[in-house]
Image 1 (cartoon, rainbow, N blue to C red):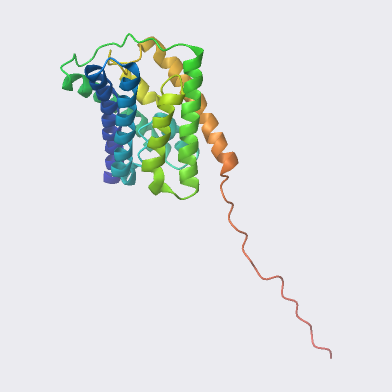
Image 2: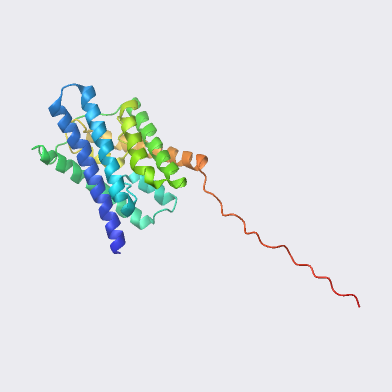
Amino acid sequence: MLLTARRVFAEFLGTAILVAVVVGSGIMAVNLTTDVGVQLLINALATAAGLGVLIWVLGPISGAHFNPAVTIVAASRREIRVGEASGYVGVQVSGAIAGATLANLMFSLPAWSESTKDRSTGGLWLGEIVATAGLLLVIGAITRTGSAKLGAILVPAWIGAAYFFTASTSFANPAVTIGRAFSDTFAGISPASVLPFIGFQLIGAAIGAALTEFLYPRKLPEPLDLPGPVHTTRPAH
């Protein structure tokens, strides 16, 4: 029970800090420069660096999901119990809201402010499919090849790259998407845009999971090398 509580708390803490990094660095970027490209670069670098640290610190405890899409796929593969997965998802969402609140307060903004940034075009939705599918494929490849130590490098690398090559700037996370709706700042998303984003993120997660199964199929147990039947010859009388 204590181990489960520790895992669930790690998911809450990790998701909260991740969203605080995403939202807080976005606010800081706007305070530092009016160049949108530089703002995005600041936001992306801070997010990738923060995510890498969080995976390294909390990965050994909870697996460092910080993402309902990752948890749902893990539960579907029976890598985590359904009950524990439900707990993960609940605290990921609440942690994301707490993280946005923390970022707002650190910059002397209202704790909660409904974002007015509309993100509801087909290109953005396609970007979320690509970003989330790629994320689940990276995680699947790391898991299936026994390369867990590379998670703190490869997962942030994908998210950082997807900030720039996807139109949506790579949310790729339902909990983070919900949290960002509570901050009317650079990284925000309007509440009306949240559900479509989550829907396309889940589609992307399913695609990423399917690609993992195709490219990195589970190895079946090797058949036992049992001796063949022993034939005995009855002595002649």
